[in-house]
Length: 165
Image (spheres, rainbow, N blue to C red):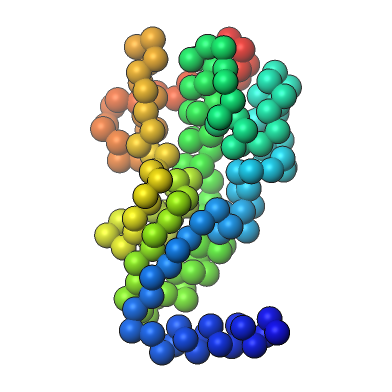
């Protein structure tokens, strides 16, 4: 059954004049960036948040109710920086190769910076946002991400370290 589905899909893509892709979190999960579950990426990069707050996943850390804005933005800025520095996942590279000879457009709910690392902006719509433009001013500290094309010179990351400080 699976082999037949792959053959059918391959033939439909071959015949198509254009392709509209709906991309969701499964692409990032397949790349190893599973935002919803406890995994080694989380353990290696956010263990201090796990220890301090009992957070078990990136998604949980994003929506956790911290007692201070500095704690919340400490998590946000590390999460954003991690995703900015993360290599492009193989599923995104594979999708680009599949689409290379086609007219295509990508609608995505992913805001984890993987799509814009591979696909040109004019061929994508990230309708739930993009981490690169997530910002705040908290006690006079800007939270723009530095390497993203956000307004230059406006951003500083909250340093990784003890999340309770």
